[in-house]
Length: 90
Image (cartoon, rainbow, N blue to C red):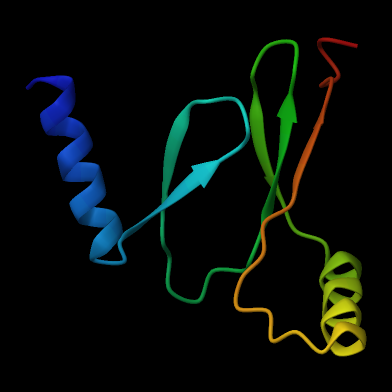
């Protein structure tokens, strides 16, 4: 299957709500499955080896809700990407 065909399939699955696209700022398009009932999470990215790890933080979510309340914005979605060096690359 050609790469363009694979990408079209991934885009179709995204439009159907089965995948979500991840933009981690490195020019690589990533996709991850959408799981019903799954907790919202963010990503850690190693600038050395490119490793990507998901993380969840209730305190961070609380701060984002406080910013929403103070700003008057109705935040529909948010993504947090933390970049740095994993333990193997430090």
